[in-house]
Length: 172
Figure 1: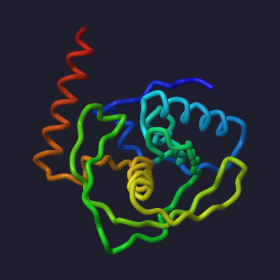
Figure 2: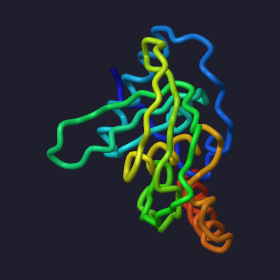
Figure 3: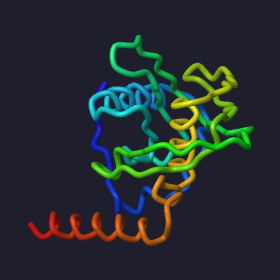
């Protein structure tokens, strides 16, 4: 296992729609193990493969908090098959947009279908934080960032700030 670098806005790869995983092999299993290590190290509650530079439909999630027993979930080719009409606003952040948080309105509950690392199909009914993380990570593999759920003004400010920071780093 290895900690992989997390790409940051304005990296254009974050806007790429990730490719489905055709075959779950040792390469995918290694990617998943590395993603969990990277996610826990960051620390975060979710990570999409595209965030570590691999545009594949793979996400890792662990929505546990603090001293709770960890409940890691690897989702390959996840698909949200149902969303509740009820919504909730909650503060979100992103490992690819470090140190920026804002309120995002999302469906309160979702049903997600996916494959695990052994190729077995699962369907999970998620609510609360897990539902939010699932939606956030599925957005990532579809080239969507949480700032896309904000007003154009807020989104433009965030993009501008991160673009300036990237230019400053490149100039050093």
